[in-house]
Amino acid sequence: MTALLDDPLDAAALLRAGALVALPTETVYGLGADARNGAAVAAIFEAKGRPHFNPLICHFPDAEAAFAEVRADGRARALAAAFWPGPLTLVLPRRADCRVDLLAGAGLDTLAVRVPDHPLALAVLRAVGTPVAAPSANRSGRVSPTTPAHVREELEGRIAAILDGGECAVGVESTVLDLSAGGAALLRPGGVPVEAIEAVIGPVGRPIPHGAGPAPTLRSPGLLLSHYAPTLPLRLDATDVGADEALLAYGTPLAGAALVAQLSEARDATEAARHLFGALRHLDAEGQRLSLRGIAAMPVPGEGLAPAIRDRLARAAAPKA
Ligand code: AMP
Ligand code: MG
Image 1 (spheres, helix red, strand yellow):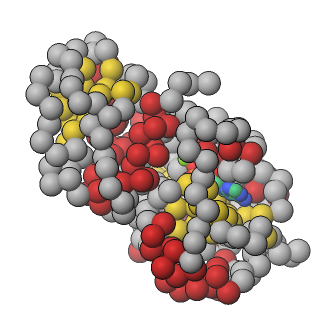
Image 2 (cartoon, rainbow, N blue to C red):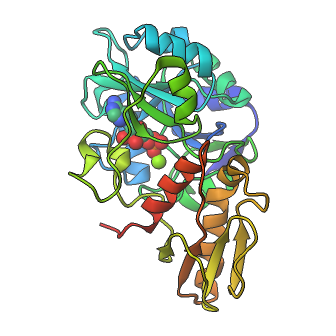
């Protein structure tokens, strides 16, 4: 029922007609819809089972197209010049004549915008000629997809098509940075390390650490504590592993696990990010088949993409609401 496409022009035609199409990006597969079309945007929330208060990121072929819909200050322009196309999402005030349907922004007066670094996504965006709203192409709360097969596992029969771009190169979602309120606040760590952002615009406010202070869910609903979650329970910072557990390894695997997936033998965080969601899916499916008790994850220390990995693992381990 869900077609696999290889021509971006076919994907663009479906999007213009109001259909949902999963698109490859450098981060994860996105579930795209014409962001001006309220019915198409509503269908994204429906297909994902996504709460309506969780706004979507809008995608554009270049910074000029993005900044026609939102107000960009000097910092936003400098960041766009440094990182677009790429895995950085900017939250900025909507322009009065912004064409994006209000539901896509969950009724907020801000909008999250990004230019993805993927030739097929850019070809689609250029051909569609309208903003494309695209959250990750998974059922709400579950692990994000990094291959067309993952998208099928999540959304087969619920969406018109998947544009086949193979495996995603970065593997974790974009960094989300809020510039709408004067300062700069990191809403979600992701594919662009925060140190790289600070090298361009100076200090960035960090999110409230897990468990501390009030739930930050109103600031950015993607900060929902339980998210990216496998079915099996996930145990963080494991220093040992049981014979009835699956192991998510980073470096030399702990001995004794029933099943092992390696994020990066060389402890390279960029490689680990690329493998993260596929490894979680594999351990979850195989672990359930083998009736294992859960997944034990080895620590992923350091900077670069490691904070984004730790963030996703912490949410995957959080108690489900
Ligand atoms: P996803 O589409 O699943 O990659 O998630 C998009 C992320 O961007 C979520 O964390 C959203 O809560 C966040 N987001 C999107 N739009 C806004 C906005 N206008 N203000 C704050 N956060 C946003
Ligand atoms: Mg998502």
